Length: 422
Image 1 (tube, rainbow, N blue to C red):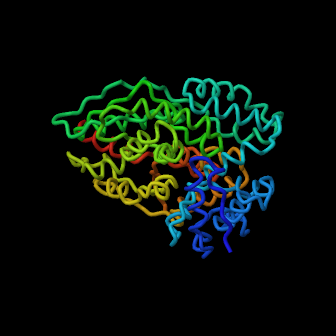
Image 2: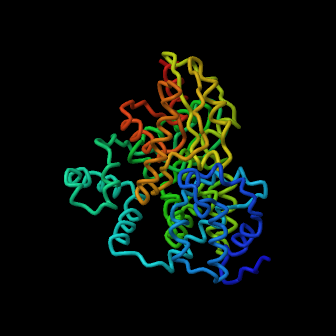
Image 3: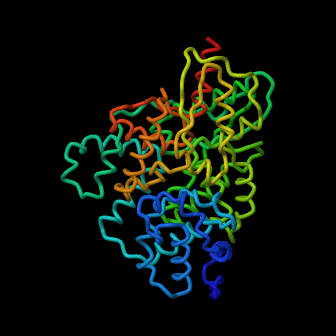
């Protein structure tokens, strides 16, 4: 017999959390697609098991500390959502629960310091770039650092690409077909700024005027997924204001960012910005979905040389946003490109925001599994739609001794258009 969850005690997100719990009929369809269940084989490390744990905590039948090890191990990849026949909105339970749990848990001083560093550097490109440079200086002494810090040092790139500032306005080429705003992102601006420039050029070539609002900031997804709701809410409110102009769409080119902006209505529920957050979420589209709907015009010219590429589904694009076929359709329009499918394509690579820093052992197992699946295709390159996946997979391909070029979908389109123009 179900107990009644005290919805009024859970704040504005309470109704969504209660609905997610009530919708679960414990059928088990979520077990097979869940990465942690597949690795660990434990019921409490499955979505079904975690829902039971969260329900018991919310009803006062279980101490939050007893549930946290299992909740913490959840990647938040949402592979369970499309597999659920009952339509459980698992993300609408997990994210608010993590925020609730974070306010009640005790963390060590080292944990608090690590989280503070992550959340005060990653969302700010200038600080993040400086932190990487500092990290390179101390990486040789990684064994003197706490074990929990070593995965962070291991992911520091050997070199940082030069980053040219993005223009406030990038006009369309020829007849203007649409006017959009671009979320520039934070981590991506530092680790792979070429993705934003490829996005601008491809949109321009297809008759799209792009505005890059200077007041924008981090989407808040990293903070939200880590239970830092107040921090995430402040970032979301800033972006709601920054993207308030009349755009046909707000374009994202990192799956995690797009998914995070789609969560703004839940994050800002009950606030003065709730309705504006709903409008912004409705206009937010991944670059691949937007271009697929708009239609490529002109059609991409052939690549200079034939290329076999494997496509990796980023979790927060395929599962959270339901964008699977759009990038594949775009890639198939590029002459000389052969698109290959990866075994277990829907399985998470282990990046998941800061998961590979907080749970390095599990993340490494998932990264290794993903690398081997990619290498089994004999692809010459990998293409995906999320910077976190790119960093994680690149590291594991390198550890397997078979590094591959890794591109964003829009970068391959840009290569084709550039080759045709030359």
